[in-house]
Length: 317
Image 1 (cartoon, one colour):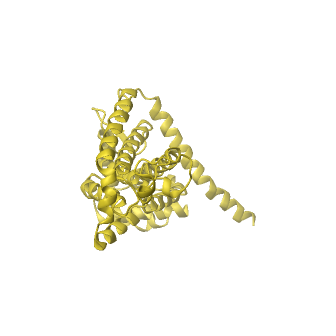
Image 2 (cartoon, rainbow, N blue to C red; image 1 turned 90 degrees about the vertical axis):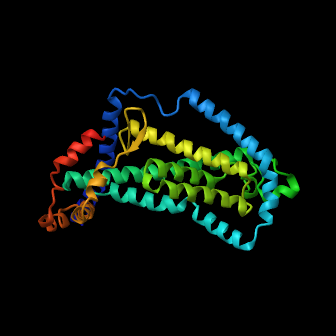
């Protein structure tokens, strides 16, 4: 029994060591002098709030009441597609895989794997954590904010109109503004532009279609959708800036632009051999011993000591 307790205590120490390493890296990065202003300064936030409020108000007065009539007249085929998009627009589809991946990576013993493998999984873990926090954080804030406003959803239009407010009603039919699905869509669009630029067009189209589907199924007004999209995108952009400040997942370019740290990921996917070594390193880190890495050493292609990778990391932080 004592042997099992010893092994369990050692395994439980790995997540603590990983979290301590992440915190230490953030501390070192934050001590470095920075030439960049925050992503959103006070004036930027005020301008964003004023412009967003004006746009939401214009869209609300112009289209909210009209959208109820048009949504009720949609053919069943359109409603079927809208319902499908609305279902797959739930945040659980992104939160569960991203959250599980972060927990799995935190539980590994990463000091035993080669530097390139460790760096690649660190980048994957940081970006997975960003995706989880961007969607979960914006969603939680919006769901709290809904309770303060208590706007009636479109099914209450005939009884109360489009501007019915029932604060702290804590009922689904009075939780319309802003749209949670649209907030998730805004976060997904930001993730596409910041993390997966090759997929940004597809994620943009999916995000907008998913947000619009909430109007079609009679769950939200257009102004709810616009407010959710703006908030989800802005929150995700701000969060990427906070990650960059800690040197985790993102970096600020010479012009202040935010870019994802993916040098190790790109290097690890340059050849099938490196992909095999990448996943072998994951298995070894989770087991806590070098098993698969040693077995694949014969296919080594420089992944253990790659000078070009180190040069890329210096040039593209």
